[in-house]
Length: 561
Image (cartoon, rainbow, N blue to C red; front, side, top):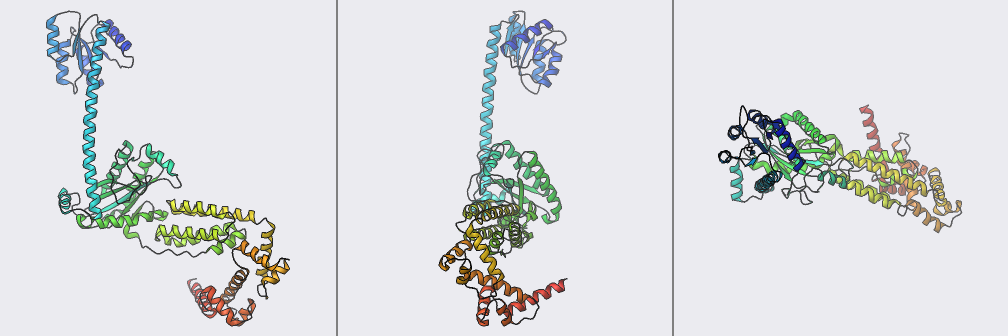
């Protein structure tokens, strides 16, 4: 700022400053009173002021500035009079320097250089102090984080436990909440890492989820998200949130210890609202993923029950894989079930082999959805059984180019974050398998096998044999046997028995009243006992037992209607 009652002098001094330091911002005032008012608003670092001015001279301005301004600018006095008493008084009241008018360019440069050096040294000193304070804060947070980790894992020593209890962080009743920040569905890890570089926590590394690691450097965005999470849970009590190392770098995790005076279950609707707002804040920050929160068991005494609350929250967290749970899951909402897959690879292959890709997708979706037990089946087991189904499907037609497709699908399923994503992967791989089979069936050998299978489905009740069918297609029986097994993955007799068994099941479910020996004859069996043994081996029950079960099923359906 330049303070001078002469406009010509103000313009000249401003021109010299801008010529010497083109990037600086220059303010001007015509007297000390106006300069004092402007300095309180614009806060210039350096003020050049004339000594002799009307209303408020430079020395009075200097004294008032020292008393009234909320900061301490450097003041350089300007005067056309080379009087020692002026310079002495100015320096006594705290002036940085004293320059004679007209101001010499070299003298001005020397003053500016000294000012820049002082400000640079002060800035460096502030940075060192701030860095030291941040290190001390980080060390304190890291120590607190380690104590919390050891407390939740039950490994605090006696002295540490007494220190922990005395800190009052786990006083009274409360609950432990585990929150994760997961990437958008289908987002590749590289993209996620780019988002982390743009503002997510940089201190997470792959390790055990029960090992606390305080991030070595936290960006402003990560700190803002951390505080937003703690602030959100503070709506329900006293919240302390710490960063927790995640199982993989791209999915950071936080743990919140929440002291509450009433049951958190009474606030479920409010919790859904608060977490929805938290999700909106995440979207506004430009991150495409979502928060998920698992809420552990409430305990009357946090100091004693906190570890159990943490374990129950951790157990519930994987079930947020299912869309029906949304982004918040209370541990008491779970009724874990053992997943069971009702479909098999042979059914899928038959549909794909028949060109019914949509039917195969629907069958697989229905089976996997049923296996999920409405979000109560353990997600990893669902993934494992789905992968096993695809591997069996590929094995049933080995050498047909399905292995590569299956391996990639298995990799994607194991890495997927959401159940809906798993279903999309299944649709994609079955679609590609359908195309592969269709292409392969264009060969003459496959057309022959298709015709053979059609013949077996039409004439299963006759006394068919490998030799008779091979002869009808003018193939050597030995070669035809090898060709048939390569094409279907099963032997001729196995396929024929399966066709006959499916027809037998259909007749037994029918209420026509046919005797077992009549059904055996209609399905191509001349020996009723052999038919019964084969049926039990294939289905797991005798024909009579199966008919009784089917009747009960049909009767139950009738009553439900």
